Structure formats: structure tokens, C-alpha cells
Length: 442
Image (cartoon, rainbow, N blue to C red):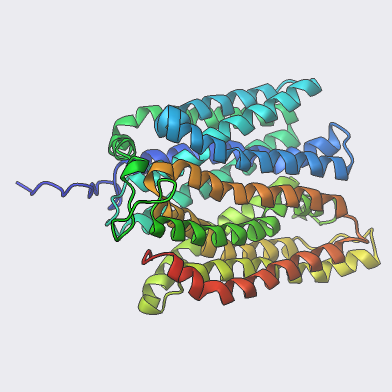
């Protein structure tokens, strides 16, 4: 007879808690719906609704930015009223309703559907990550690896969504593409409800939050506003990560706006006589994650004590995005000289591949470190702030789409490259300070 498993060490799913499988597939289907629709959203506005690039880019940026920005309020709602489990459930239902609303043709349904998705994602997104973090106790060294596996679920959905929903939208009917995204979210809800017992330990751990009056400093002195000195220092470190993430997502999230227009209007998409949908380009990012993630995991372990710190990884991630836009300056210059020229698809593929090297240094690491640094009683709100960085980056990326003309492209690509590379240098300089603020969290 085997010995019972130690508390908090349920290792029945690839060496991780069983609840990780529930959250993996729930998030996979939610990301299927989000990225499947995002792949053709700006194309739908330009080709079907007749929006010009500037207006379409502004709507796109407002929508995607609001999706991530609403996560702050979703975290507060979960922390104070609904709890993490019910917030995810209600959020998923609202998201599905939003996608099905978009399947109707009249323009008011378009805006109503986007609004529902914004509200639903705000409730769901930060609390899914909070539940994943709560699957592990504070001493469990598997947390970073668990988030890496969870991140694979995100990118599996991000691959399948554009390949299926975008193909249906561009090749069959745009509104069927929206409905397909709604079906994906419905499957995610079924997975979530069916696996409730597997995530019960995480829900119970989150329900045992420390009350603000119990917070004290390491010396036992009263805390300020319910948080200890150590917690405030860690929140300051999170502030630096927050700014890094804004700059990163500003460059990265142009995949759905300006770079999507580049792929649609200025890139040769015909391979062996088949012209593939422009929305397929965004799957390159997720394919690269699937390819590169095991390599990065091996590399971090191989480096051992020489593994870069979290602040250093953030700086490297932002730097890679800057390098990707330096690469795009070459075809951008060619389009500037000849607006009728169509660039090779490999320029976009190369750009996205470089960006994914940066994403693997920043995004899963950021999710993990925010669950470590956040005071447990406000973990939902703090994870919402992590996604707020994505929101601001998306807003900025949406506005960049207005400059996607052959004459303006080189200037746009150079500006993004300089912003990202400049902040990467600043982040490296701040690394020793941030490490001290983290208070021993690795």
C-alpha cells in the first residue's frame, strides 16, 4: 500500500495537481474563442463594415485594450463578492453570449457583442490565473513549471482558433466565424464545470485569505493600509514589471492590428497555388511557443545558478520585440519604394519568431511572479493589473494601425524598435533595485 500524498502535492497529472488539467483545457477553449475571433476582427471591419484603417484600428485597440483592462475590475469583483470560481463561470457565459451576438448582421449587434466579450473576459481572465497559482502552496517549487504547462494550453487554443474560426470567416461566412468562436467558449465552460472537484483545493485555499487587519511587517509592527512593508516593496517591484509589460505588449499585440494589415494587403500569401487567409499569420506566434517552450525550459534548468533573474528576463523579452521590428525595416523600405510590391511571407514569419523568444522570457514568467508577489487577499486585483498592462499595450497597438501605409511603415517600425530597445536597456539598469524589492522571491 503506497503512502498517502503530502498535502498540496497532488501529482496525478504529469506530476502536477489534477486541477491543472481542468484549468488547462478551460483556458485553451477560451483562448480558442478569443484568438479565433481576433484573427479576423480588423479584416471584418475593413472588408465588410467598410471602416477605414484608422477607424478600424481605433475600434480594434479600444476593444482589445478594454478586454484586458477590465481584468482589474474582474479581480476586484472576485476578491470581494463572487469569488474566483463563480467569476470564471459567469465570465465564460457572458463571453459565449458575446460571440453568438456577433453572429447577427446588424451593426448594433457588433458593438453589443464586443461589449459582452469585454465584460466576460474581465471576470474570467485574472481569476483563471489566480486559481492556477492557488493549486500550489507557497513552498511548492512546481509553480513555475505549472504555469509553463498552463501557457501551453493558452497557445494551443491560439493555434486552433485562427485555423478554424478565421478560415470559416474568410472562406465561408464572416458571421459563422463569430459563432464558431462562441462554440469554443461553450466547450470551455463544459470542461470547467465538469472538473470542479479537481480545482476544489485551490478554491478552498483562496477562500482562506488573510484579512487586512492580520497583516504585519516582518518585525511585527502594524501594517499600512492592511499591507506590510515587505508587501509594499513587492508591489513596487510589480510596478516595474508592469511598465515592462506595457512596452512589450505594445510591440507584440500589433500582430492583430498593423501587422495583420501588413499580412492582408502587402504580403504574398499564395503557396503552391493556394492563397491562405491572412488571419493564419497570427498562428505563427503560438506555433513558435510550442516549439521553443521545451527548449527554454531545458535551457533554464541547464543554466542552474546562472539562470537570469526575473527582472533580467523581462528586459530580454522587451529587447527581442525591438529586434523583430528592426527586421521589418527591410521589407518596409521596399514597400516605401514600390507600394505595389508584395513582400515575402517569410518576413512576417521571422518577425513573429523573434517576438516569441521575447514572449517566453516575459509572459509566463510574469504570470508566475505576480501570483508569488501578490498579497493573497488581493491576488485577483493584482493579476488584473498584470492584464491591464496588456490592455494599455493593445490600445497603443490599435492606434498604430492608422500608420499602415507604404510611406509610413518604415517610420512606424523604427519607432517601435527604438522604444522597445530603449526600455530594455533601462530595465537592465533597474534589475538590482527590483531584485531587492522582491524580498527574496525568486
